[in-house]
Every structure is written in structure tokens, then in C-alpha cells.
Image 1: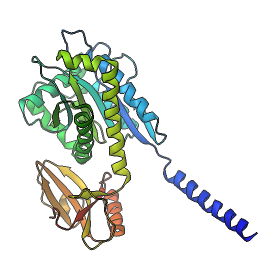
Image 2 (image 1 turned 135 degrees about the vertical axis):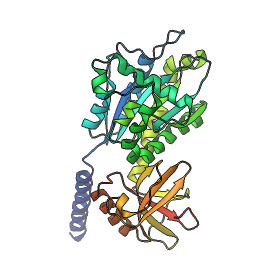
Image 3 (image 1 turned 90 degrees about the vertical axis):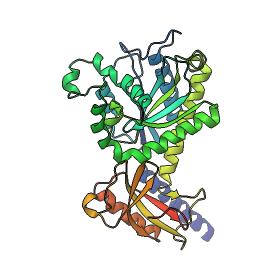
Image 4 (image 1 turned 180 degrees about the horizontal axis):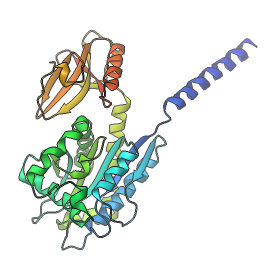
Length: 349
């Protein structure tokens, strides 16, 4: 009788845990998949008969199918058929869904036999090549009605027009780069594709989304060999799996609720050799680490990583304290804040 009672209590206990877990995980991870171009906008022209709008849509549908196999992921498509969408409509779909990720998929084009993959996050284009790619993708606005009014004088041919685009997305830059890196790594290591890198450029559709966002150029359809691959059943299957796997890897990193700086090992919480800070922003702009620049939060630490400055709030050896600091940062408006662990000997302010 005592054993039976104990088992009953145990079953109730685990039932309560399961119910609590269910209640705490009711919000799915929302991914908006955007197939570039469509309808009257076929994408970049090619002499080999490939249509960017069709290849992009096929890949998006396959990525979505892969992700939909996971019950905690909700997939929203900007288009599932061959229809024309304005750039602002694509961004609005993602924002209305309060999405966790926005992923726009395209094919590249060039007047040479250039080949390889590249994934973009929003930022000032560092060179003429990046500007050219962004310019081509942004020129779709000329096919839209009332584009002069809707885009407030934005000119895809003017480098000056891009400067204002970068400000809004910089809160999500670090997460966008993280996802883009996963994507490029999968293309390179799993598919042996030429890696043209993670890049920054002024894409209007990325500028107007309020979540981590990337634009993937899956390859050059102006390159006969690469175009054949992207247009094939095998190519679409492999590329889509690499992208969906990268999204799952990114999501897994977020679920850990802890990013480890300068180490490949899993962190041990509350050990003397580890300190915790809360990353609240990442930007190409160098700001003074003062409270007036960060909504009154203090102390603020600034660390430079290549061309990006990362800004951190707080400094503690207690993981639970770091969690409290994160909640303070979120309450102050830094909704994408996350905890970072710095191991002894790693990069510190």
C-alpha cells in the first residue's frame, strides 16, 4: 500500500511538472520564410532559363516543411505561390506575427561565372559588390504602385539612402550574424559550397523587420553549373536542409539561455573562474559606456569584436544574479538581451 501511494504521488508530481512545462512553453518559436520575388517580378535574368522566383519558392517550401516537423516551431510564409508582394508587405507579415526570425531566400546573379553562397545581415555595405547585390534586390520597389510615397524617397541607386536603414536593426545584429554564420557554415561543411561569407548591406526588407533577420543568396543562377544544381531536386533538397538545420541550431543556442564567450565547452554555473554579463546591444557605432546611452542602466561595458561593438550590462559571478540583471535590461526596453559567460582568461572589458 505504501509503495502504491508513493507511486501515485510520484506520478502526480511528474504530471504537474509536465503541465508546468507545457504552460511555460505555449508560445511557439515563429519563423517567417520569405521567398524572394514572385509574380511580375521574376528576379534577376539568366540566359539558362532559370527563374529565381521559382527556385526561391521551392527552397522556402522545403525549409518550411522541415521546420514544421517540430511541434514547437510555427512557420509563416510571405508567399506560397507565384504572386507579387511588395517589400513592405513582406516585412509587415513578419512584424504582425511577432516573429522570432525572418529569413529571406534568393538566388544571386552576375555578369561573370561567379559562384558560391553568401548570407547578408543589415548594415552599411563595406564594398561595391555588397552595394550591387543590395541595389538589385531593392530595385523591386520600382514595380510597386505609389513607391515614391511608400518608401519616402528611398533611392536604391544612391549609397546615401542606405545610411538610415541600419539604425533600427542594430538591436538584433548579433543574433542575425549568429544565424547567418550557422547557415554559411552548413553550406560550406555539409555541401562543400564556396563560402563567400557573412556580409552586411542595406536591404530594405531587412531594415523594416523587428526581429533577427537574414537574406540568403543561395548561389548564382548565372553560373551554369551552380544554376543546374539550384534548379535540381537534389540541390533544392540539400540547400533547404542546410538552412533549416541552421535555424534549429540557432534556436537551440537561444534555448540554452546562456552564451559562452571564448570557450567551446559547456559552462559550469557559479564557479569562481566564470563571470556573467548581460549583452544588451551590438552595433557598428562606438558609444560611450555610460548609463545615459543605455536607458539608465549601469554599469555598462563595451567590447570590440572586429567591426562590431558589443555592449554589456552588469558583472557578476552568480548566474541567478545575471538572470535578474537580464530581466532589468528587458524591462528597460532591451528585449533581445541575453546572458553571456566569460571564462577566466577570456576577453574582458
